[in-house]
Length: 537
Image (cartoon, rainbow, N blue to C red; front, side):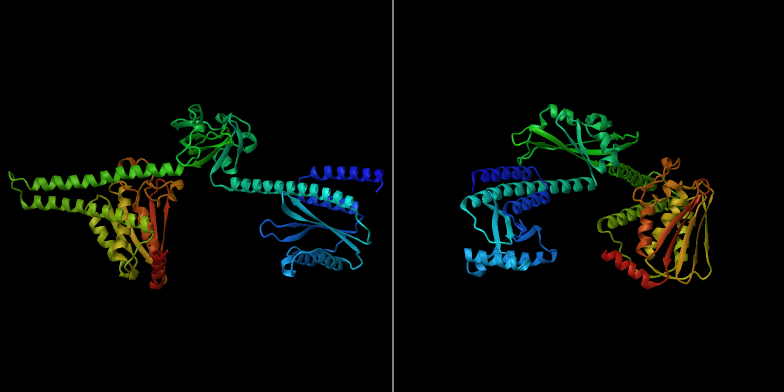
C-alpha cells in the first residue's frame, strides 16, 4: 500500500474512531460502526451481532443491505457459528463455511466475507461481518488496521451498553421512587433538597420544581417535633456511626408537619446516610410516612381503654356498694328494700355482661376476621320485645314497638341479633333527651326483613355518618362528653348484620333525630352462604 494511501486510511480511522467513541446511544454507535466498516472495506452488506448478557446468544442488532425478513435466518446461522462444538470444533474451514451460508441467505452473488470479533477486556461482546461483491486479497497491514478499528468499536459498544444499563437502572429507580406510597426526599450534605417524589408532594404540598435546591428547613417546617431532627444528629456525628451489622445507622423522627397550604399532618421521617467509598457523606435518603391515621387510632384506643376502665369500674362499684349495704349486720332490711337493691345489682350485672360480650365479640372479629353464627329460626319481633322490656326499666324514655302483622321468622343467630337490637336501643337512649320516644319496628318483603330503631335525639352530622360504624369511633357532639361508651356498639352491629348476609344504614339530620335500619335475607341459603364466606374468608 502506498504511504499516502496508508496515511489517508489512518486519518480516516482516527476520525471515525472519535465519532464512534463520542456516542453513548447504543443504536447510534452500532449505526456508525457499521457505516465505517462498509466504507473501509468497500462492502455492500454489513451486520453487527451482539451477545446477550443473560443467555450468551448472538443476534443481529444492526444491519445494512439486508431485507428485514432475512434477519431471523441470519440469527439461526449465528447460533451455529458461535457453537462450533456441535459441528466438530472451530476451524477456518468451519468459519468460512458458515459465513458462506450467511451470504447465501442474503444474496448468493456476494463473493467475500470478512468477520471481526468485538472483544473488550477478553469479554466477547459481538461480531462485525462485512460482505463484498468481489474477491480481493487482504494484507497483514490491512488486518491490523481492521482489528484496531474493531477494538475501538468494541470499546464504544461496551461504553454504550454500560450507559444504557445505568440509564435503565436510573429509570427503574425513578419509577420505584415515584410510585412509592411513602414520601421520599434526598438531601445533599449541606441539607439542601436534591430530589423528591410524587408521594412527598401529596403529603407536603411542595412540588418537586419548588422544593429542589431549597434548604430542608424551608420545606420541612415542624409545628411540633418529638426529639431532635437531622441537623442535631449531624452535629453529633451521626453520619459516621455504624450499626452492629456494619451498616450506617438510620434515625427516625416524628412530629406534626406544617404543609405548604398551612394544614397540619403527623409524619415520621427515617433518615439514612449514603456514604462514598472513603466514608464521606454523599447524600441523605429520607423516607416520609403519614402517621396521622395511626396517631388518631392510638388516641382512639387510649380513649377506649380509659372509657372501658370507667365502664367496668362504675357497675362494679355500684354492685359492691349495694351488696355491702345489704350485708350489714347492724341493719334489718325489709323485703321491698332488698328487692329494689337486688334489681339494681341485677341491672348492673347485665350492664357488665353486655360490655364483656361486646369486648369479646370485637376481639374475635379483629383477631380472626370472622364471626361464627348459630343459625336457627328467629322471631325478631319477640327478640325486640324482650330487649325493650329489659331496657325500659332502666330509662325514662318511652320505647315503642311497631312491627308489621305476621312478621316472619328468619334464619339467624338469636343471641347475636339481640345484641344488634339492644346496642341500637342503648345508643338511642344515650343520645336522646329524657322523656323522648324511641321506636323499634320492622317490615318485610318476600325476600327480606328490615328492622329500624328511630330516636328523637340530636342527630348526626353528614360528615360523621360514614364513620359511626368504625371501631372506637364516637360521634363528636356536646352529648359525647357526658355520655359514656366504648365506641364498639355500632361497629359490632355492622359486623353481625353483615355476617348474616345483610346490610345496615342510617338516616339522620342534625336536630331531627336518627333512624338506623338493618335488612336481613329471609332465605336461609343466602345467610348460610354469607356465613360460610365469613368463616373461610
